[in-house]
Figure 1 (cartoon, rainbow, N blue to C red):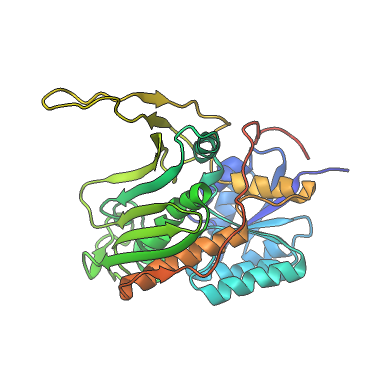
Figure 2: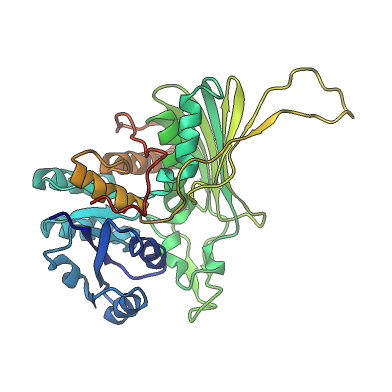
Length: 376
């Protein structure tokens, strides 16, 4: 008899709330267990979300009725934990990035392929109504031929809200590896695979200070560039420029603008699942100051049902039952990581660095995809 796909979580930290809020509401999945090195933290989350089993990570790996394990550990542990999940005979959905180096990340995908198992990689924000509607707008030709994109993520840094932010400034973190996956994944969904990148980087400070929680006042080192300026060239044509910074007192986040031959498309923050979408049309006549510049701006209706993190796990669950590819797959996650690491290398060079990996056509989520329908 059909049954919901069994899901377990390894990692019960801050982001687990976002996943559990949604996964416990989707009829097609059943969250069976939560594991964490801190068993008390896992049990607290299990109690909060009415999950039946909690303890160390092994309780998740040992459950025969769990089909997909969601890996919410810190980036440096992603590959090790994902490999343990594969070894236990279960599919993996891992938070971004897939890993922090190419070799181990490639090895993980090879092991999954050999075992006949799947790897899905965050962010699944690109599966939400915002990016998916934008893809349909572009495919219809509403902005003509996409030419280039501009994205911006800048603010003062996560130490003002995160109680233990040091890992976000360690290898595998920083604004590039932490936030870059949202923006690069979005650009790959729009333009296809990245061919080469160039970049400049800097550290605004050599140390940072925790500003909230029990570690308030604690200093920690900055191991990676905290500001990175990027140029990207895509295989199929098109360019992009991006800024990632945690050195800016002025907060400007979630900016994604895609300029085409017939209009500029502004889409929602890629760290969210949807929002306002507009197209600005070219001027039809010359405007001489001080006359105001008036351009036609078209509001685009967002198509799809808003949810949140866990949408990629649900798409994977349905794809397993349907025998089709899931959209946010491991190869895309690897290509995004390869692109981000190439950007790091371009900072050191400094020179344009080729991105060796590629991906085939990126899949889509249909507009009528209903996360709250019971389809299994």
